[in-house]
Image (cartoon, rainbow, N blue to C red; front, side):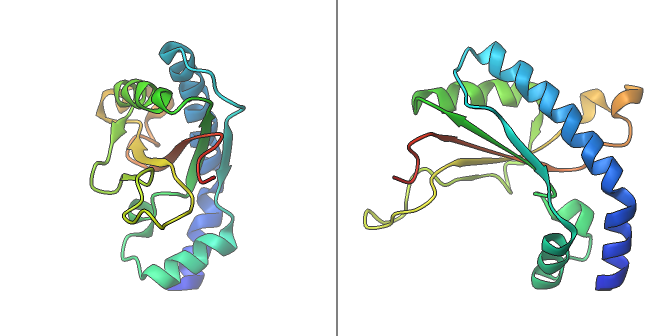
Length: 154
C-alpha cells in the first residue's frame, strides 16, 4: 500500500474510527465505575491523518489498519498507583488484551531514567462481541489505553 492509498482509506474509515472511539468510551466509563477507582476525565482521540500517514511511512506497515494499534486511543489518569492494577483487571474482563503489543512503562529500565510512566494496553472489543450487530465492524480493530497516575513521570 502506498502513502496516498493509506491516506484515502484512512479518510474513508474515519467515521468507523470515531464510532469505535464513542463505543469504547462508554465501555471504559462503565469499567472505571465497576472497578471503583477515582479517575480524572477520560481523554480520547482518533489519530489525525497526517500523524497516521507519517507513522505508516516510518514503520513500513504491510497491514496498517491491523498493525497500527493507536489509531484510536484513550488516556485514563488515576490518583493512586495501586488503582492502576485494579482498573487493569477490570479492563481485561471488558476487552481482549493484545499481550504482545501491550507495554508496562511504569518501571524504568534504569534508575536514572525519567520520563512518561504508564501502562499501555492494546485491546480489541473481542470475539465475544462480534456476533452483536452494534459491534460487528469494530471487533478486531485495535485501540490503546494509556493508564497512569496524575503524578506519573514526575
